[in-house]
Length: 470
Image 1 (cartoon, rainbow, N blue to C red):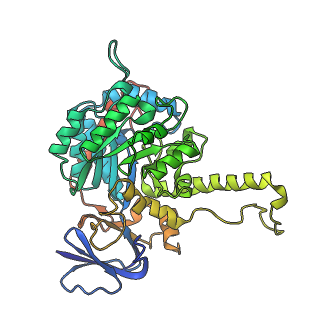
Image 2 (cartoon, rainbow, N blue to C red):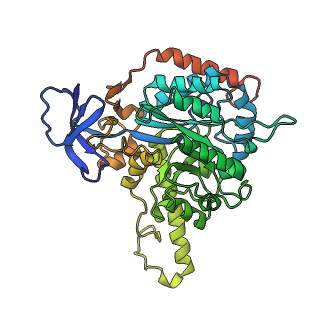
């Protein structure tokens, strides 16, 4: 079965192919067969993309999708509020069905907004039944995903160890790896979302890294690098013990020092920054630009929809603007430290001391596509429109009232595009959104189940939204 996407402005994210002002993408079954101008494929079904952008599907490198039913309750929380309320009060209320419907609707929302691959970082799975329900929702959505098996963080009962002293459940990893998520070539694959050096002891770190490598899995950990971490030497200690490599991913890292960050980047560890969530409760620069300056490949993601929007279009906007803000502050600080070196300013201008804008739009789009794919160890399969890779792509219309007139294509995508402008979404050669309409059956019923889930989870808590969405 062949499909020809014809006549779009192609942003391939492949350095050899580059940008095609008017190009075609030929898909055969689940793979990209060719990318180029005026391709000949008389036997192919044709999808016209004239006047549209054609690019690889966006990759969301970190989302707690199970929390979808509780969107927009924590935008005014502090970081301490998140842990106290989400993990302490709401998390224990979750039943398996809450995880299923939250993950399903959350994944469908990602597809609707142009994300074809999702790292579903699931740490609300108190039992195997919770895990299976979340996985059911993810598989049913049709999205490509890495299912990150995490663990809950309850306060211990008398006589029980603290969660920081409990290794990742090997039996669960073994069960998933030998049954539902056995294949690395499947649409949904497995990762181990471990506690890491901030949230566990060194003995638990050793056990968790060993477990992930025993089963050939990507491991991922929440890390901040603050003074309250349980392994004070952090990733320097892990590097000394040979635990670091490209099969590990860390998220956040806001307070990591330069030496430790250098060790991380040189070890090949991927670093995912969730800028919009991080700056809300922290006064440090998100890591993406610091990682790039050290020669690494930055990765970006939204984190949790309790706090902020979960779409990658919004994520790219936040990453671009926040990093420009911090970079501009660095430039001004250097100029103030050497006032004699300050450049003369032209009259009748803003008087800004910034003479060059940092961080290009093209770079941020790379972060959200090929770099995020690399962070998930999937860049050999997705992240660019490259012949031989999976046919994961999106077609973005440019004629809506919000997009028309936006000239430079990457700037148009990042600043002006909305989910409604994502006209078509294809994952593995399968159309999941067509002509602006998500094709998943039974969507109205699942929306109703999601609302009922959120109402039940919030009932009696007095939290925002407890009275219902209306």
